[in-house]
Every structure is written in C-alpha cells, then in structure tokens.
Amino acid sequence: MRYRSFGSEEWHPSALGFGAMRLPLLKPGSPSSIDEDLSSAMLDYAIDHGVNLLDTAYPYHAGESERFLGRYLERRRPGHVLLSTKLPSWKIESRDDMDRFFEEQLARLRRDSFDIYLLHGLDHQSWEKLSGLGVLDWAARRMADGEISRLGFSFHDGPEDFRHIIDAWDGWSCCMLQYNYMDVDRQAGADGVRYAASRGIAVIAMEPLRGGQLSRRPPEGVRRLWEASARRMSAVEWALQWVWDQPEVSLLLSGMASMEQVRQNVEFACRSGPGTLSDPERGLVAEVRSEYRKLSAIDCTGCGYCLPCPEQILIPYLFDLFNSAYLYDDLDGMRRAYGWIRREARADACTSCGHCESRCPQGLRVPELLARVHERLGSG
Image (cartoon, rainbow, N blue to C red; front, side, top):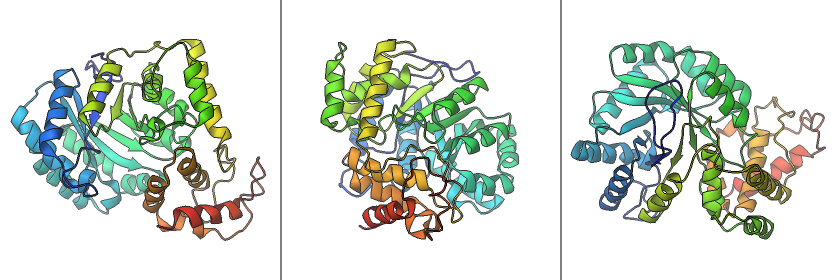
C-alpha cells in the first residue's frame, strides 16, 4: 500500500480508503440487508493489505452501515485503522439534535469517541442553519471532552460557499469533496482542492468514479482515446490514478461492493502516487473530459452566470444531472439524485422570469431546458 500526507498532521493515510456505503446485499434492492460475511471478508482483505481509513455515515444502508461496522470493529479491533462518520446535517434543528444523533452514533458504532467526525453534505443552506445553531461551538466542546479527534465536513455546493466554510474556522482537519476528472470545475472543483490543501486541511476525494459512471462502457470516442494511449489501463484505473496523481489529495475514498473491486482497487493503489502520470497522459485525460462534454445533451459549461436564481433553482447542477443520465447511461441514478433535491430548488419551480437567459453566455433557452429536465428526471 502507498501512504500519503493528511493535511498538516503526522498521521499518514493509505492512498485508498474504504467507504461503507455500497456494501454487498443479501436481498437486492434492500439496502439494510448487508451481507455481513462477505462485507467482513472484504474489510479484512483491505485492512490486511494496508487500508487504514474506514468511512460511514448515519444514513448509509438505511442506518445499518454504522451498526455493522460497530460489530465488525469490536470483533477485529484493528488499532491502526481510523474510522470516520458524519452528523446528518439535514436532520438537525437544534443543539439537542446534535447531541442526540451523536450519542446514537457512538452507540451504533460501539465507541466512546470518533477518530474523524464530519458535518455531512454541507451546502449554503445547511451551513447557514448549522452555523446559526452553533455547531462549531458544539463540536469544540466534544473535542475538548476527547469525543472527537478530528473535525471535518463533506461538501456539495459551489466554490464560493466552500471557501466561506473553510474560512469560518481554523480547526478543520479535513474536507470530503466529490472529485474526479469530470468535476474539476464543478462543486468545489480543483480550485477548492488546492485551496483546502494550502490551508493545511486534508482533502478526501469521494466519488472518484462519479458514483460508478466512469466505470461504465464509455462512448466510442472516449474508448478510442483510451486505446490510443501507450499505457494500458482500464477506464477505472485511469480515473483513480488521475486523482492519486495530485499531491493535494490526501486519499481517495471508494465505495466498494465486491471482493473483486477491493482487490483491484488495492492493486491500483499500490502503484499510485503524485506524479505517476506524465504530462501527455494528463493531456489525454483532458481530451477524454472534452469528448464526454461534446456529447452532452445540454451545452451548459457550469459557469454559474445564471445564478442566483430568484426561485433558488440549482440550474447548472440540474443540467449536469440531465447530461449525466445520457452520457453514462444512468437515468435511474440521476432520477434518485434529482429526488434528493429540496422541492423548491427543482426544475419545475421555474417561473420563466428570464433572469437566467439574459445572463447565459451560451444563449441557452433555460426555462425550456428546465422543463425537459423535470419531465425526464422528475418522473419515475
């Protein structure tokens, strides 16, 4: 296993972290029915081969991920392995809620403290709510009591909000970002990765395969680009090595669902490292990104000039979901993602005021496109 730096800390994480959000199931379609024997064997293999960070969260596997990991870690007791979990930000309405969920998670995971504790899925709205409730004071008290060793957050919003959260407190240990070669200019993006690293904050890259989208059979143009390279790697390894190639990334988190995925990812991690790719190979990945984007159904660059929307609609994000449904043959997945968006920010909240159209550099007919998005993603 290769090991990397974790912000300004002396601890060195494995290049590959194990995300316990897509564990194998006994009953397909029933997320709570974790196959504990197979999942335990997968974790054993990962830990035996050097993985030293396990990640979970309150809602994973309908709450059973934390409970399963609690039983597993109590049985195995790997002292060198750190565990991270997350405060369910969307459920918090008071300081009492913070205490209640925290204590429930300690009980689920059979622990008296957490190595890493994250505020889950922060965006502008959830950060305003949590900060208004004094979440940083609450966390500082838990840290002073020895119940949290490192505090961080996971993030799903734009670069301005990301910097605002980073700058709000000097005590952040880490941040968890969706980061892959297709998302260099989306959400926090590459600039956010570099900014966090410059502040001594560890960057945990999640969704390096965009929820599995980059592991699917690529379009013909993308396939030809990969095959033209002298380095013979699968599309999956190209995506992972691109993330590991960047020194600002502390580790890559993978939600592995089979023993084969664990073995492959461990093998890939063992030949990873900053500077592993050459300049021509980085250029090839940029060509692949461009080829994917040329095939987009909506020609949105994600510049954000259409924002803020008077109705608070997440226009670039919605267009990205729509494009992803077609680029990666993942309509069901994008419908699920659309369903997670708060109702007032969905495409059907558009009033056709024209505010966005007057600002769009691409001249997109935004209200018409939003209607298409809702028609396609809002059904089913």
